Image 1: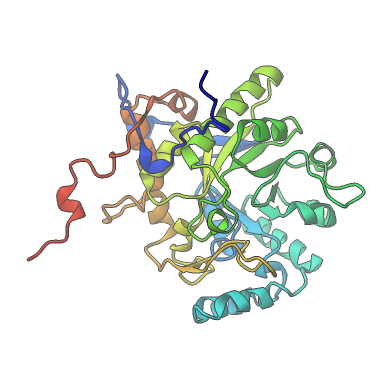
Image 2 (image 1 turned 180 degrees about the vertical axis):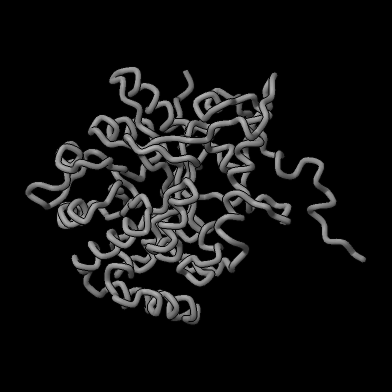
Length: 381
């Protein structure tokens, strides 16, 4: 008998390795329903702006909410450490490449202020926005009362990797079952990439789960730590956990694929793979009025001893409205994300996101390059 392999590896897939199969019937794109819910809060579009300082401030959160989406404010960033966050963000955007990480480590060493947490939440609510805020697991118990008392609508507890079972030196660490019973608002938790971790998080009572470890444009966790699963496979595995959990409990927990998106086709593939919504970072950092002045960086970038991110200059490509709904003159799919999703659902015959989850996906490693000789070569004239 042949000696068995020590470990058997499975192939996993990212956005560029798969394609969506058109349906046997079609629907007018304007008749598709792309709404979804987090707990009892319904959103018109399944697109969330990430909790990163170069993406979301209070003004951006209000604008995003009024357009039918959601933006998450990072409560451990410059918005809650400084009275004048725009000045600090400008310094980060202008810093030389060789100095920016050290600058951020210094900037983020300032203490978080409870009064600024409350003030930022109240600003979003006063502006008519749905207020979602993000904190790391280590600080959740410390700030949760301030967050709830200030009137936040959604609490996001996020870190590079989050699990339902965590071992630490704390005598009584953060327990998600206790947290969701304590707070009267939906709790979103992430990030994870596996079936088992996802269903364990769902069983704690959370309202949604963030899926994705390390795919973001500004994140270097995959290089520094060697961790992660490509987003299509991660989404499919976690969507299976969602469906199995729904069958066992009767409670639907939304899956939000977080990170790695570049164009409309990526969003379509993530939702066809099972996501209820997607979270975008660098795409929104390119919007006029985004707080990063055309720059983007991850929350792990200013880590005091092991920074896992890099500031990237993404520039300004258009308004938030253009990025979400068009019109656009760009041909590579980096704007009109909602229109792209509606058109894809239309050609697949999916009237809503639940039906789109049933669409066939195929392995197609040449989908981006097949027949694109002239797009991939530089003209000699």
